[in-house]
Length: 243
Length: 243
DNA sequence: AGTTAACTCTGTACGGCGTACAACGTAGGA
DNA sequence: TCCTACGTTGTACGCCGTACAGAGTTAACT
Image 1 (cartoon, rainbow over the protein chains, first blue to last red):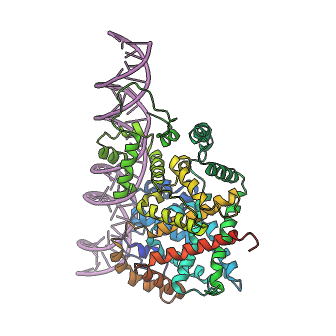
Image 2 (tube, each protein chain N blue to C red):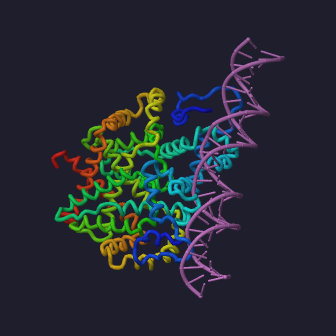
């Protein structure tokens, strides 16, 4: 089944090619492969989503995976689109643009916290998937009330989503997090020796930011700080170019 | 020479351990390994920076690389810190905060365009390197004139730099760029068939954004759009919390 | 009904990767 | 002089993605 990626992305669409009828029916669908890959990535990280482990999880041989997916890079695109497709896209009702944009930002943050591996997938071809397009359309409508032309509307949405991605990246649990206390214990003294009294501002601010990061409340603080600024930055457009 | 990463990062500092004097002098320094890795990444991409290729480029055996660097992940940290260390950090003079922040943003954009592989390195331990700390200190001073406490100042700088990283990521040349025209030629018709008249907003805006992206002037436009918004979003702080 | 062609499934194999380990060579300190 | 710390290297192991060829299965065609 060497169907092209575009047809695999749209495999649930009525117009999608279904492949010939000859030969044995495959025991597994492309959708099942993608789902298995997603749950594997959710539970053990994207790095463990190897073709071999995926075949094992599905109860098929390693090479059989390639019956349903052309190559690993394609699989990553399918995974990302599947994750986007599963996002709830609640109607905005008569909410104002601030509420709408905040809703979009919250939904995307939740998405990336639930599927951190999405941050590691950066393939332009994802843009042509049905889930991605549906999400894009829905999120563009959050900006309906703002007087932006098409290009500016796309740029504004990108601006918001890039902020969310950066916030999600900062919140992501470092795979080295378990060792960091020991590492820090070994490093702190030596680093202090190297630094001495140099860079007092960096030392003070960095120390404060580091403590804040362990304060548990920090991520929410940084999120609110940034999101408020993002919203403010879009506000002038709402009041016309003269504001 | 199994020195710890922290000591390798600060290898040029007078207080850094130099290792014993016994045995043959190594023909190559850690700095040379890092430099070779950076130029290799600049010219052929980070994926080609393998231990084997690095040894080849340096004229030493594969395993000799491990004499100067503990593991590949450590090498990436050293590379990132080296890139930061090489950034020019010009004095701000009496420029206002807007000029300063713009200068910081421009410098970081230039850095990421010159070394796109920096976007692929995301290791918290980089924060403890001398180049990274010097850069951090310098950039924090760009915000001197803004009435921000330490935690907010760090958050504001992160906000700016995250925007720059996202912009650089968008400008980065996709490794699949060469094939995209052919891919698109094969996909365009089928995608139109799948989409039909659905998602008219997404189709219109996406089309406009896509055309704009081929307009060569687009990246500068998006950059100016976003940067202006980032600066505006910091402005209220300058006028006090009441504004 | 028999043949053919399309299709799934699988095992083997190749060239890559990071790196553990042991052997060997080389130099200063005792 | 011998010891010992250190640099250098080759081999080997367990991963990875995937090309390829063969075997088994089924519907369509003659």
